[in-house]
View 1 (cartoon, rainbow, N blue to C red):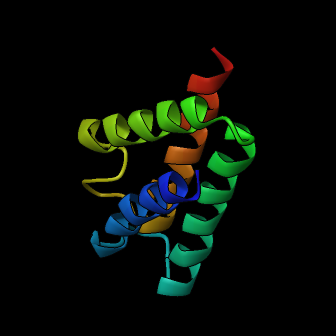
View 2 (cartoon, rainbow, N blue to C red; view 1 turned 90 degrees about the vertical axis):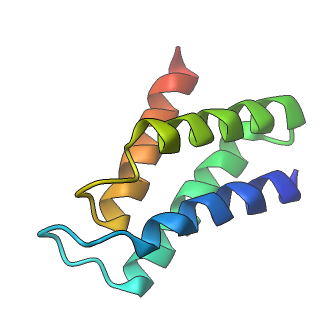
Length: 91
C-alpha cells in the first residue's frame, strides 16, 4: 500500500518540472500539493490495495491525458489530479 502511494507521489512529483502558469507555485507549494494528493489517495484507498491500485491507474491515465502537462503550474496540476480522482471515485 505504501509503495503504491509512494509511486503515485513520485508520478506527481514529475509535474513539478513543468513551466509555471500565472499562479506562483513555489517548490514548497508544489510539495504541499503533492502531499495533499498522496494523502487523499491514502485516505480514499483506506488500506484496500485494489482501490489504491485503481486510483494509481487513474492517476497515470490522467497524466497521459494531460491534466498535469501543458500550461498548468505544478500546484494547479496537483489540484486538478485531486479533483479528477474525487470525481472518478465518486462514480
